Amino acid sequence: MIKITRIEKDSLGEKELPDEVYYGIQTARAIENFPVSAIMERPEFIYSYVFLKKAAALANMELRVLDKEKGKAIVKAADEALTGKFDDQFKVDVYQAGAGTSFNMNVNEILANRALEILGRPKGDYDFLSPNDHVNMAQSTNDTFPTASHIAVIIAADKLLQVLEDLAKAFKEKSDEFKAVPKSGRTHLMDATPLTLGYEFLAYGVAIERAAERIKQRRDDLLELPIGGTAVGTGANAHPKYRETAIAELSELCSLPFTHAKDSFEALQSRSQLGAFSSSLKELALELIRIANDLRLLGSGPTTGLAEIELPAIQPGSSIMPGKVNPVMAECLNMVAFQVVGNDATVSLAVQAGQMDLNVMTPVMTYNILQSIAILTNYLPVFRKRCVEGIKANEERCRSYLDLNPSLATLLSSKIGYLKAAEIAKESWKKKIPVAELAIAKGIITQEEANKLFDPKNTTRSKYHEF
Image (cartoon, rainbow, N blue to C red):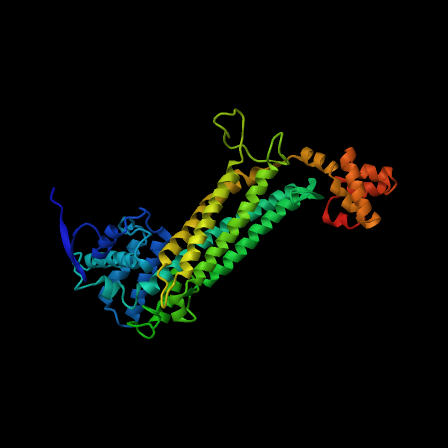
């Protein structure tokens, strides 16, 4: 079978390509130059870039600098791309030329060649409709790649924010379920004054909500777009009204309230907004690590650990020890969160690597941020359903620890003073006599007062202050 090919030309020379492909010569060069990871751009980034190209074509037609026949063909090609028709044509590795020129041209070539087909022209007929002159009109990789990055991160972040809302709600529902389960508090991993298991789980829910608020704030910062700055921020080769027109088109296409960059020069030099967003993901990850570690400790045992809660048994825990069950969901959450922290380290290095009038490291920032969002968005609903929602309290174990907790003597401090309360705590621990029983025997408090102060049913914040 004879393969049909075509010859394309760029500023470096000519290259032969299979005629069935929609990408062109610059994409082919990138495939040869960057066979790094075999990881391609994520769909949300691809489609964000296509939205941008469609908005640019619409804006340039409106401003009468792009022929309507060509512009409409580009728009139609973009609409087809947004259905996933050309997903297999986006061939550039996420590790690529600085600034993302390779991927920008990958998009330009696919849309140009499909637009040529729509107009009854052969692929590669760039003298008639060019990836650079028409699809990329009034644009540069320098302003389009970070613009598409902002859009993609916003779209992905909105899905993550819903996931976080659901996870916070699950922890709060557990808080309600455990609100009457008193237990020993722990500070420095040592016994501390009592609280309820419900309060601990409420705090987990609030921590997730707080992390989500930070992500939302940084997400909103990304609504400011660098589009229209072209190469270095001057807007060279763009109509004076292109920036505002393109942003208006993008806002309508994406149903998002985009605005133009406060300063187009800073918007190309600095990637601080992406860096700040990545940092908010790291902050979430650190909270998730802390919570996962708590769940693993609280569920440790069953005989030699804390065993105050029981995590759902979802799979055998050992290939050699029969009957062993491990906290696998929390362990996986740790690993996911570790990866997010590592991704943020990469983004941080890339943010500071900007030089002069452009930060060329945006591709690796975008990849790492979108990967972090993806693994969190994929895993947290599973963690919620298969771990959090099935957690049970071991009330008997919680009570047994609380009864002999010498730190209960803290609740006597306001009556007998710190030093005397410390003596009670030490004696309680040495003789293994509950603090309440010892305090009654010494005549420090009455049985009625003890019932009010030490009864597990009364170990709530309001009751602490009534004695």
